[in-house]
Amino acid sequence: MRFAICNEVFGPRQSLEDWRHICHFVASCGYQGIEVAPFTFAENVNDIDDAQRRVLKNIAQENNLTIVALHWLLVSPPGLHLHTRDKVLRRRTRDHLASLIDFACDLGAGIMVLGSHHQRHLEDADFAGAWQRTGEVFNSLTPILSERNVTLCPEALPPPDCDFIQRASEAAQLVEEINHPNVRLMLDAKSLSAEVQPPLQTIRELGWGIAHFHANDANRRAPGYGETDFHAIATALREVDYQNWVSVEPFDYWPDPHTLTRETLKYLRGAFAL
Image (cartoon, rainbow, N blue to C red):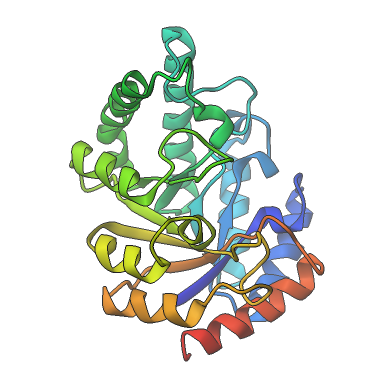
């Protein structure tokens, strides 16, 4: 199992020099990968030119890190919405996702995690319409995903954070309906902990589709700083022969970014018996 950590742990805005220090520190702790929230580099990914993209990738490579994924895809620029009835806005959101696919490919990141709960809230409780329009957006992106060798993963987000695709089974249903090799499933430990059945049972049921895994505690902190049983999660991931990245994504950075980065990797290595 390979471990990564998400870069926004170290701040919401990052210069190239910040990125250099972050990559050096993450690598020194023993991580093999780092995951990127695009808004940490620019409000609009189209403002990150080719030269900057090469530098970002090169800095990671110089530190023997793989940029494994993008997440928080629709946080910026403001106003995006995945399945809005507004055709112009929905097209703008779709085009932004297409730009992110190019960005992911340029960085060497093979995964894009589509969470962004505010940008997918239901309009007038129209679940059926939202589902149909989300499928249309995903289907329109599959040729670009194939061309750029990037996999798009819808993320289940439980209430009260989100009211659309709240359960892993719903995310899996969307993946099955799209039925494309570049649309797969990601699971998140915090979100799994909010479901009725234990996380290990969901992992076992959906192991066929998992392309990425986020590690965080039910209390929103990093693994090892709460009660979530990552030994059981590790067992279930091994049972389904999951061999991709486990990426640390806390929302509460207690006790501080540098301490949690070091200590969480030690904890995960113990949980996964590595």
